[in-house]
Length: 412
Image: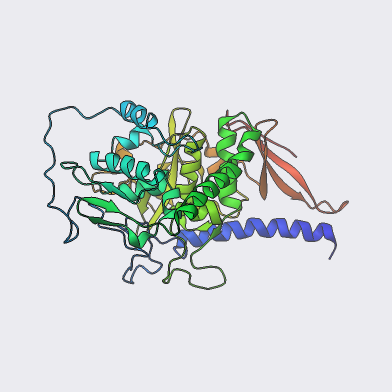
């Protein structure tokens, strides 16, 4: 077979593979995540009992989940008004980390901070500061109440912690959260350096563009083209059985592998490093109740969905900038999509994701067999293969899309 023909067939097969992957996800053969697990575990078979990969302490932490813990504190009663999101965000931004820490591990949007409990916010702060001081415990103040989403938020905005800490060592004892590092003090310091260097590496291509949305797309391209899904592979090997090897955002960042929540949270973390407002949500799939997790980011004063898991393959942008209506068509009703854990935390109550600015992308109107990012012109370039009988099959521009204006142009 001639090289040109082989090239075009390979390109075409990439798109077919991407479409097959999306269909498999929709059918439930990939990324079936288990409900209610604070560590983000998932169940490939909805009829099968779920076993948490690495059980962390109970989600609703007070101070007494073990016999050794102190008595449960009484939540403080106050008439003070709830703090505003902007105030909470500013307060977190003011938290000082050691001077040699490069990246921002307190870049949590105020909108999400406002939904977290006081216990979530305070214990996140204490755990992060203790970690960077080389300590292995954080005191739980009396009256702080529960912190049901602490570890989910740590994984979303402080993924370095789970790269360095043994999950099974995390416990609550004598009114403190305690943990053990995977290695020595020197290895702890090296883990921090290696993680921050890897984040620098991932952010380097972003600097090719001054356009914020092109930076967002550059990171998305990485998490769809350079990542390997660690569930039931197309080779038929079931990687969902214990031991679960990849279950944190750090696995997607450091080793380019994971499952839906790893990709969603890793993408979320890196978006926050370029100044974006970002978080993740998770939805119950209609029919079998399996959970899937994806990212929400803010652009042009609107919240938008991005699902790197369902765009794996790197050839398409079918799940970038889409809406809750589109997500419901995928099988995730709006009433079953939540932010954080808790029955009252329905995502649509706090985050409206209805803007159709990018409908030309997620409806497939502007698409191709593959795409590239033109940083010089700030455009997405979609390509098709030219099968003209007068020449060898060659790539040609099919469509150019401007993500800043949503304008596009087709080429004959």
